[in-house]
Image (cartoon, rainbow, N blue to C red; front, side, top):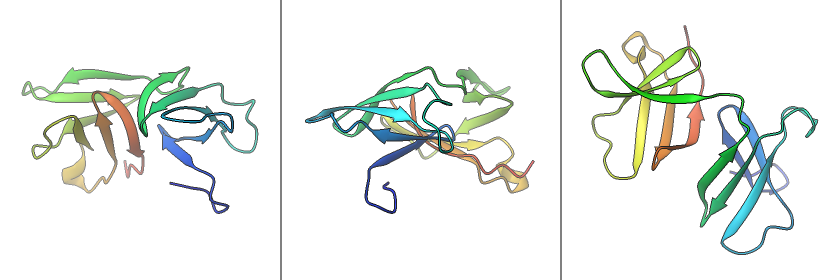
Length: 123
């Protein structure tokens, strides 16, 4: 994803991260910029070969858990996401537990690290 001016940006847990201009090569550091002030958000992340490796100081904490049927789930704040049955390998799609009620919120993880979140809950 990129800004209108072509600057690379990552959106994760509802926060936007911009690539540090000094980052060169395979490993890059990113800083959070919530709103218009970079001082408001102190979170940062590190990517290696365009895959998120480390996330520090995020506001939204997530916890891996299981559903009442013993299936894998992720709890993010007050919302629970269930693992999509068709997901396999390191990349996994998680859908809101209220998907049957029309909620389109979802999370994508790679090796248990959240890389993308659509947080458009309708409940």
